[in-house]
Length: 613
Image 1 (cartoon, one colour):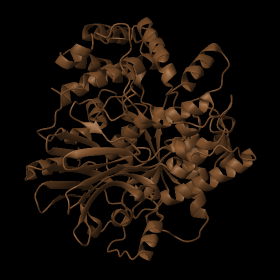
Image 2 (spheres, one colour):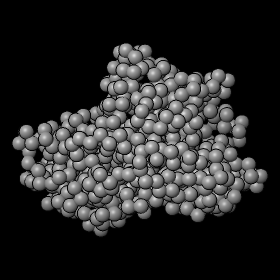
Image 3 (cartoon, one colour):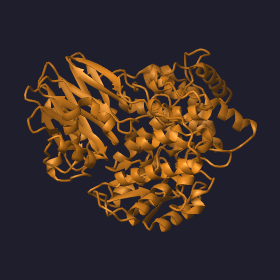
Image 4 (cartoon, one colour):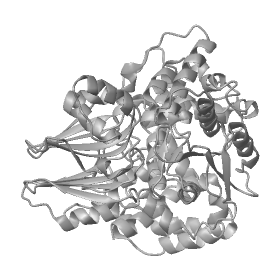
């Protein structure tokens, strides 16, 4: 895991000082050292900030050059099946000088080219330069766990793991992308799966895509479509479906325990994180061959929220005891929202619906605890139905009806119109100059996928959330917040084999009126605490936003909104927004609904003040 960046300048030579600034900008992602490589023709430079996890020796430092000097790779992520790939490559005659996954990845490209990508089980963003012809190959993993941003201007091209690094490149156009910002304020989950960012001059390579830069032209290709890998033959029984889920989940967890440094988990006491830490304990207790799984894994980091309704300390304590892991407790119940607002937003490097202090703090504690890798439960909610709660009243029915049509082109205009009306009624709409219509949606590839004919509305909703809306945004958030402290997050629920199995199952094996994640709950019987396996309570891992905004954070927000910004004021009626925010703070009337609707405006104003002054 690390930060990567690079510059191609056909006019050459590349500016060494800019490369060095890129390394500094990404140093939080790779605190174990930064390296720079410049091609012989001086037209290309790669930068790598390393977080050493697999083969921590200097021999695996990047940028990494092939033995014959033809190829150079920079790579962010982990290839969890690198040992199996290495063995296969050795039968083809490959020889290795390291014990890491970077060399395996490069040898895979030399052997198979872009056809290597379906063979990989992991998370990655990579760039490989062919030093013979000067072309560069880029790729992201299937679901976009690891980020890759880029900018192009004439004969110049730059890429990086984070937007703020690209803003250190002098020729990159940092002007606000007004249509993107407008849509982001209307739908904070509607941008991350697209190619667009908040800057006119910066684009995103979407997850499941690869690209080739040759002769100044970038050609982008979608190499992974989950829908193409879904079988819809119904399992004979829930037991059969659960047995396969259990085998895949345990193998996914085993692969993700491969590490040459200490690993741990962020444990909340909910189903997802408890399933992960319990699977780790089950694997460790099973003995058998040791295939580079870390033996130092019994670390569980537990955030407590004393006096807050989201506190799950009893459940997390039970889960830690069951799995035999050492709990590291730290209390976030008394955090002051304003104290860390600037540093958390700087780490996020984007816009979201709340201030993510709690996850930022937990990864800070992970790093302080001497752990560099966590196995966490991200992806399960969107894959097998964590957000669909039971209920038969009109509000539940309407919410689920709208949700089940997510991604449908026919329904998108209606849902946007309904949302716009609701925001106006709630006095939470402050966008200027868009008449009665909602801001235009950004194109997202997954919304055009041809799904199985027997997919239910609920199945379609999950597919859209996983590939197009909620999960891509969450993955971005946790990449930024963990890497702010040099911590790698691995996600056993997001192994592609498990994803395609779960998404092939009928809806009644995923959720009912009382329980979400049915197949996973059946699969984990006897492996995790029964009280947590069968629990119906779901608690989000959130900061205490309403309480903070009713107090110290409210004063911080007023300071943010008090100053003008040309682009923001063109987009937003700042005076009306500030009046609404001030009224809520004065009355102590902030709640989670108002937070979710108004915080994106505040977040964007802060972002533009600092990134586009």
